[in-house]
Image 1 (spheres, one colour):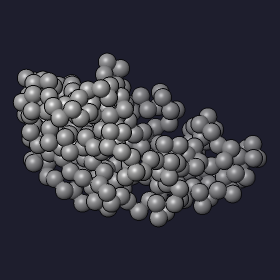
Image 2 (image 1 turned 90 degrees about the vertical axis):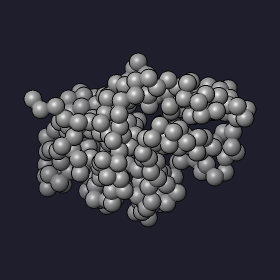
Image 3 (image 1 turned 180 degrees about the vertical axis):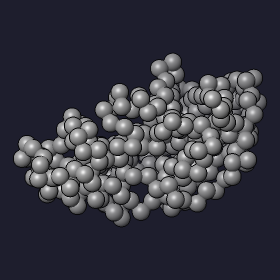
Length: 284
């Protein structure tokens, strides 16, 4: 069995939010400002690096200019807080520059997206390198489950309770294959992104339909055979919803890649310690 090099892709904003809200806000830096997200981000990243032992690392943050998904559906992510209106002490983005400074100090490459979502850029890297590298995506976003294959994993960091999704774990958890996950979400919707599913189709019904017909294209082709009748009628009445949901949920893989693989090279630094680095940087 051939041993492949590993690429670690970190969904920067998900990690930022997880640490900002998950770590004690009383952690204060030298300027008497909260630094819990910086401390948590660095600590988690060091643990993940030691666990995965990647050859390449890239952290991807969402930029100010998002994708055109809100043009497709004005309700897309409408449930999200507008952090432009949130005061500094309660705003995760107040600690983003500190995290970038830490990444610079550790010589770990990162970028902010422009015109696309971080999810799409991560999907672009997966599409480009999945044949030659083992890829770990660090995020809590289940949209990435659609990318999983024999070389691609979703790494949901939860300390000692960390979950790494491979193909079998997706089937075990959701009842569908990673290749069916887009269609599954199209049917059931995605509350976290404010995407409505097809009315009257819950998780069990979606799994049953996909296990029988494999994908939505076949479901629509065989729509007259689908019972109970209220499910059939709901599908017929929501063909447009299905079409819109695909555009919202399916990740765009054909995107510009801003960083070449060799630029993301990483050498294992087992001596890294969170508090030592923060003190060296004069943050603590």
